[in-house]
Image (cartoon, rainbow, N blue to C red):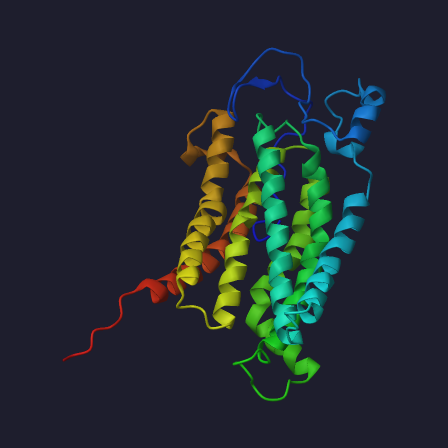
Length: 328
């Protein structure tokens, strides 16, 4: 869950339609309505018999213990940050200063969350052959697990901002007051802070409550938008430590550009195409088949991705442009 967010509920909370056969946009058949779910964890298998017969209104994710993923995320992300920071500071042979340890530990946690989100998204989307009705238990569990990350990351980004000027080679005099540092942080990273707030206050309720078990396929695709985050984090660390002219930074820049374009920008046309295939309509007619609120939500999610992609393209141009020729 990262920079793209959770999808709005797709139209139709009526009883489950006849299940399609085949891929995401297969043709509807005449079989009896049912919800096709992925393999369940052991606790779900133990209770499936008791829950059988509840009909197609049964949400497959309801069998997960309520609140357990949320509690796990509250412990996991801050705990991993403290473990990484203290390890970088105290392990023999490292003994990094506090600013360096904080910045690298924060980037490491962001990368771990991105890998987990992308993996969960791939499992969910690849398990859902029907883009509306198929369900996977991770679609209910992972948003709960990941939402504490966005709260933690707002604080972690502030710590990085606070310590960035104290990294070796970037000393900028005495550290500012807390109020001045917070103001500078919000001015510099306001868009990212708003993005994280929207993930918690808007996308999380949509993903866990409003969808009513519909559209797990789309949620899985949106989770895979995080695939570009590890490359973004590595690029920031390399720039901070003045390694922007190395081959590693150039290779990482190419990977970041490709993954960001594919997983965050082109993702939205793909989602429209997948839904159009489900409806049996061309791509260009899909926006007209959706309520205006759904198109507005997609535009709101896409807009910051386009802005950040523009920044990445500008950085790539500076990195790969040929050096200016000096007159003889």
